[in-house]
Length: 420
Image (cartoon, rainbow, N blue to C red; front, side, top):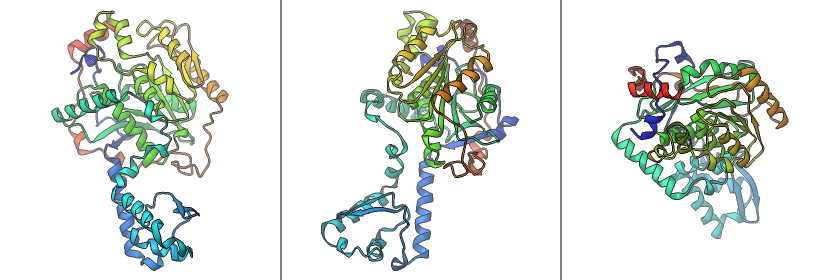
């Protein structure tokens, strides 16, 4: 267990798999990309069985432009390589069948069909941007190596538990929430109910490893990887436009939220009592010397510079755990339009949800031109404006059936008393 989990300990779990909250859980598989690949291959095989090469007719979506010996295509997820000739015959483009072009076309199609993993790892088409400036290569390599070493020591669960609360009247927005270190998704539910009903949007809260029913050692790197896995699941598997996703992070949850907003062009970012970095936060809690024993994580002061979406920051003037000046720094350094709200009576844990958060945030959304109204043909949503997940993701995986709720140690209890 790293020093970070000692200074910022996980609380005792507030829910179990047998509680009513389990009905609202969605279990995101880590290998959802493999599931997508298998579905693609099954669909491909089905088309091969049903159609002969000469009977194949391409969809309009499969071929966009044929111009000057160059074909611009979307992913040929339904077209087997051996049927390429019939495409040219059908479209009467016989001149394209000869020479260098045909060889180049076959090579491209073979490369795509034989490397389906690469297709689903192409996040540039899913609104990831500015990826070369996200982190230094050394930091990314170190984080990956740390995770590989961790996996050798303990086997991570195959699913990430998330709490999903749909807005029954329909909405075009889904809020992805990352909670603070003093709560889990069970304790967050009442707060998220307010967000869902009063902001009129769907809500999904991501659990952290070591919290709630998600067994494992608390690990900042794993939190970041899980956060991105869930977001990519919404974008790739559920086919939700990133512009329909609102990222929200509270306290330590501002780390993964800001990190994702620096990589994906989402609708907007909401931060509640954020910090500039874990080390800066440790300095405030335990003093200048002790901060150097803490591995610096969640460097929001770096991520915020790359955030281009509208950003809303809420921070209380009476917050003694994370000083207001850290939010002021983030507000100043934000790479996009940013609003900072600082209620006088708000501290780190207590605030007026209606007057301090709901009303200011709704005003912010209107000024930013963000609407949560939906249309019946909105991609990723059903005709009623609700995100629907496959039933398989709602069923409790076997690995969770015998999970005991996580317990807080005596050291964690002492630290929490000092934090108060």
